[in-house]
Image 1 (tube, helix red, strand yellow):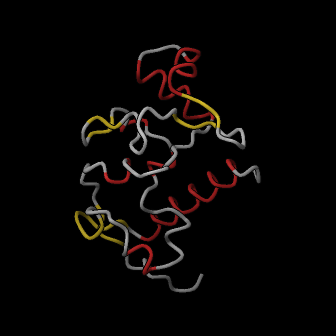
Image 2 (cartoon, rainbow, N blue to C red):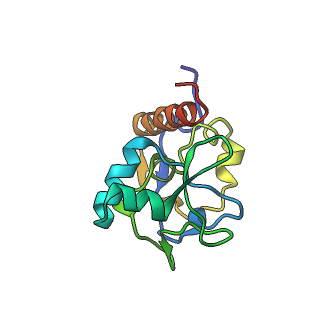
Length: 143
């Protein structure tokens, strides 16, 4: 693999500011594996979770229902109510495959956690890259 901008790792620590959860037009996609984890964490049945919190987008992908024009419905002030069981899309941010292709795009993110905290090693970043890429393939119907 050719040298990439994160070869020496990236300093990152989530600041729990909620900025990545409050994006106009943003959608949080869910995989089947997320459904049971989140419903169990919330202490509700899977059918009730599906009814109250899940809908489909125009391509029939599962997404968290909107209850606000921009922010995720699980964002309470600046705190994620499901942080311990958050979906792949959330868990892998900012190390998305789409963002790691361009150092300038990555560095221009409005994420105050970039450049703070411990260094995330390149191998761990690659794991999240692959996890996010596989996630995209599943929601786009390629897997």
